[in-house]
Length: 322
Image 1 (cartoon, rainbow, N blue to C red):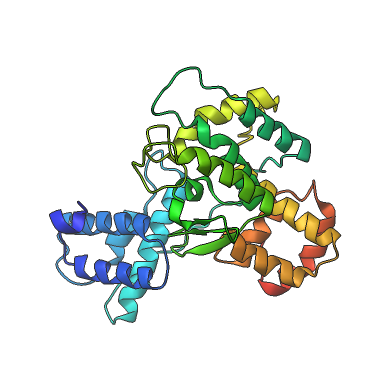
Image 2: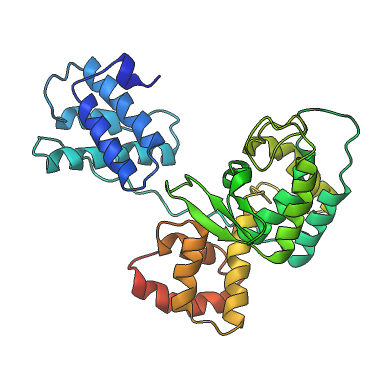
């Protein structure tokens, strides 16, 4: 039960209306909802009795806490900024805290080579179930890993994919309530459709305890986190080395690899980048072209040709991406 039901404050109705407005605009609102209800409780404990956000209250709330991650601090600050602007637009006195800017991330994703992808596929196909563990999700790995690499979807989106939304007659599937709060259709290749058909043939033999596409042997949904142990095992079988102190290679890097390889393939075909970036951005479920451009910039040393081509275009479409 959320805090608006257990500890309502003077700002609760406005927070509810603000969250509802965001949802109607297609934004995912769970994190901002939790943060603002926590602020509402904080304001109530500080004896706030008027519909306002005093400067002292806001500054105390956005002050960085001991051992708080920079991203968490930045998000908490940004959530209150958005709500304060909303109250201001309604005509109420609300102090808008200064925006917190994080340093650009120096993290570089791991880009899998074609040979490494083939090694991962072979590793998935070589797995053997030595006991009849009902909660095992090993059966889904050959189809799941190929799907992630071939479509660039997020691991959470794959885990939440419904069986009814996988159309293998016309080769597409539908992702619902994605990271940006919207649904999107993902067309797939004939070869990936064949892999999914093979998986579905065995899926039909399992208990129908859920409506998700990827299920365990007991018929229940596979969670995204449950694949971490398997991923470590696949890397070992495929002989893909860890990067020491640097994070990765990760299963999420399959998404980065898809993005980079797609742009490389299209530019080598002479496709116009004015068309590539918006199309790829929509396919990946990004809310802006800047998000798609970030994938390319993080791998600039590996793909200088693409960077040279995208530099002038991206700086024209949106300013100050650096």
